[in-house]
Every structure is written in structure tokens, then in C-alpha cells.
Length: 470
Ligand code: FAD
Picture 1 (cartoon, helix red, strand yellow):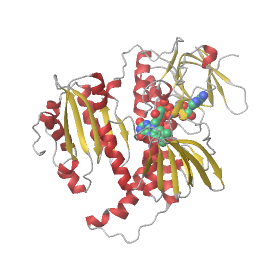
Picture 2 (picture 1 turned 135 degrees about the horizontal axis):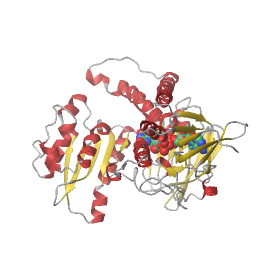
Picture 3 (picture 1 turned 180 degrees about the horizontal axis):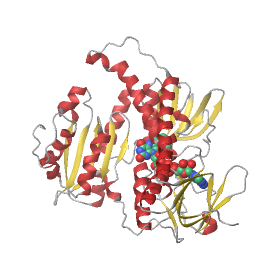
Picture 4 (picture 1 turned 30 degrees about the vertical axis):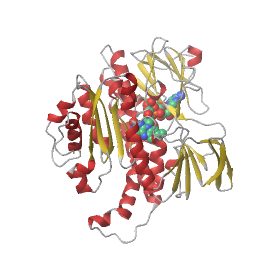
């Protein structure tokens, strides 16, 4: 079949990996097209991930504050009630606005947006199918795969979109479930559990491992566990959900732990045990693109090129943390390399955030990892209770933990649980990028009163010279 048009680069997928790569490619003078199967651009992040979840986290936090916190600030509200439809509509509007902005951004950069299901027909050809019409074939010098990921299904816990759901449906329940079961204590389960708990659901998180959010520094993870339990979230650790059956408006889940089994009944069961790379139907086997046999990730070299010359891949599709900012960074680096520039991602300084309240944010190695590697280290801890700004806000839970190399003082990792941790971590990422030591942060003047002063005090505590600790 004759190719329709010729491009320098065709990107399949318009998530934070794909659309950011497209813009950078256009800036570098590459004639670029972006293929997207969904009506709205922006991928998982904008449509059913980062953005809608944070919109609901912010709204539900206001609801919670109005009920529990405003009175102590002398603000009288009367009876607080929930209008869930308005809350969901607001979230949808945020998503709509942002996805439209992505479309305008691509149009402004003269990137062709091609609607339809993309498939690699060869290293220089992409086939796009729309509805029942014949596939359109697009010729290109290079292909960038940015098709992202989809929720992982667990045998015995198949999604029905209504009672047994993935995170996508848990962003749009039309009523607050009385009892919400969550399979998986990772960040998605904890964030969505927080939303519905604040709105009135009784939330039980069931996790196979002995701890929630297992990737976190264990000291921080233990504090998060304690604070979420205090808010009312229940945890069943070292417990597996072996099967779940929908019966009328309930889901009956069989839990197994240490040889014992029991059945719990929920109004909805959210299964959030991870995500799998989306490679199905992309034609990768046919063109011989190598994938990891276990995880299904597309394998790439340091330039994000697969084993097939001219085919590149980024984002959730390739190994590494499944995070929007990682996908975007890879998109930029891949395209810069393709355009003959030097592009690179520093995987040692990718921040990660859990948007519970308090928030949890980290960068670099955890203390557990440092111990395992036998690296000499010093730790500085500082509680938010000692920060004036946190006192003013009435949010004193949590602490900053800063870990520096025992000999060189270079920062190895920073882990924060507390108010505005998500924003505070940026300073630590920059410090690590610049190879800073704890003393650099300790001697940097921080504004007063700010949450960041807790970071400065933690940095001072590394050398036992915190002004306020002790
Ligand atoms: P995606 O965003 O998945 O985009 C892939 C795009 O490709 C999609 O639009 C898809 O429709 C399209 N596509 C797939 N196959 C084809 C095809 N054959 N043809 C055409 N188009 C195709 N990350 C964070 O960093 N911070 C957060 O706070 C955060 N919160 C999250 C909350 C939830 C509930 C979820 C589910 C995820 C969250 N994430 C968060 C993860 C983040 O959404 C992903 O890491 C990110 O979206 C990955 O970007 P991507 O570009 O690789 O792929």
C-alpha cells in the first residue's frame, strides 16, 4: 500500500512521553506526527491518572478540612455536606481544559495529530486504523513508541467496570461506597483510598507484602502507615485476595493470610496491583522488537532505540519507574538524540511522590538501600513540629530525613513525609543534580517561615549542628 505522507518522526501515543517528545521534535525542526487512539490527547496522566486523581485529592482534602480543621482556625462553617456530582464535574473540567491545551500545544507547534489505532508496519512505516475504514499508511524516518501502560489484571479478580474496578473507574464512582476494598497498597491505592475515605468510605487496603508503599524508605513508610491508620484507613498486610465474586451490589472477597482464610464484603473493590506496558496489537513481534519476557517492557539502549534501527520507545512502555515526569524526560532525551544532540536522563534523581496527606516525597536512595550496598552514611532528621510554618498551618505531622555520604557528605537521598513534601522535594532533586553535600543545603539561607526550613535543619542535623533539634 502506498504511504500517505512522509515524516521525520511518527510518535504513537500522546501521553506525557509522546506529546512532550513531539513538541521537542518540532522545536528541533523534525516534521512530526502524533498518533492517538483516544479522542482526547494527554494519555493516562491527563485523562485517568495524575491529573484527575490530584483534582479529587485536592477537593476531598477541602471537604475533610471543612469538617475537621476549619473550626480550630476560628472558621465556622455550619453543617458541611458533599455534592459528589459537582466534585466529579470539576475534576472532569480540569481534565478537559488540560487535554484541550495539549491539542492546542501540538497544533501551535505544527505537529500533525492523527486519530486512530497505530501499528508498526515496518521500521519506516506506521499503519493507522480508524473505525472500519482501510488503514492509512504513513511513511517515516523514525518511529517513537509511547503507548504507555494499562492496569494489571489479577486472575480471579477480573475487572467488571462496576463493582470490581481499576483506578480508571475509581475516579468516577457515582456515589461514595460505604465499604471500599483496595487490593494493593502502592501509591495509586493509597491515593484513591484517601479520596474515598475523606468522602466517607470505610477503606480497607489489602497488601501481600508486610508493608504498604514498599518502595519508600522504611522509616517513612512506617510513619505513613501510622498516620493513615489514624485517619481511619485499615490495612490487612501479608494478605492475599485469592478471589472475589460479585453478588448483587456487593463484592465478596476471599482473603488469605498465614494459612487462614476469610471472606469480606465490599461495595466496590479497587484492584490496583500495578500496570503493564501496552504493547498488544502494536505489531512489535512482527518487526522483531525485543521485549522483556517477564515484564513485557520494550527493551531500549541508552539512546532509547530498540534493537530495530529507527524504532525508539519511552515512558511506561520501557523499564523504570512508571511516572509521568520520567516519561517526559525520556521523550525529550530520545528526540534530542535523534536530532543529533546530546540528550540524557539521570535516573538517580527522579523524584517520586505519594499524594496522601501528609504527602510523601523522595529522591535518591533509601536508608535500606544504602545499608544493603554497604555505603558509609550519616542521617539528619528533623520533624515538621519544629517548623514555625507548619505550626501556623496546623500541620505538624511528619519529618524530613536527609542522608549524606559518610565520607564525602554528598547527598545520597532525601525522604520527606509532611505538608507540601511534593513541592519541597524539587530543591533536593536540584541539589543532587549539582552533586551537593548536606552542608550546601545547611548553609543555604532558606526563607522564614517556610516548610523548607525543616529541610535545612535536617541538613544541619547531619553534622549534629541543627539549631532547633535536641
Ligand atoms: P500514557 O500516559 O499511558 O499514554 C499513552 C498513550 O498512548 C495513551 O493516550 C494511549 O491511548 C495511546 N495509545 C496506546 N496504544 C496506542 C496505539 N496502538 N495507537 C495509538 N495510540 C495508542 N505519574 C506521576 O508522575 N505522578 C502522578 O501523580 C501519577 N498519578 C497517577 C495516578 C493514577 C491513578 C495512574 C493510573 C497513574 C498515575 N501516574 C502518575 C502514572 C502516569 O500516569 C504514567 O506514568 C504516565 O501517564 C506514562 O506516560 P506515557 O506517555 O508513557 O503513557
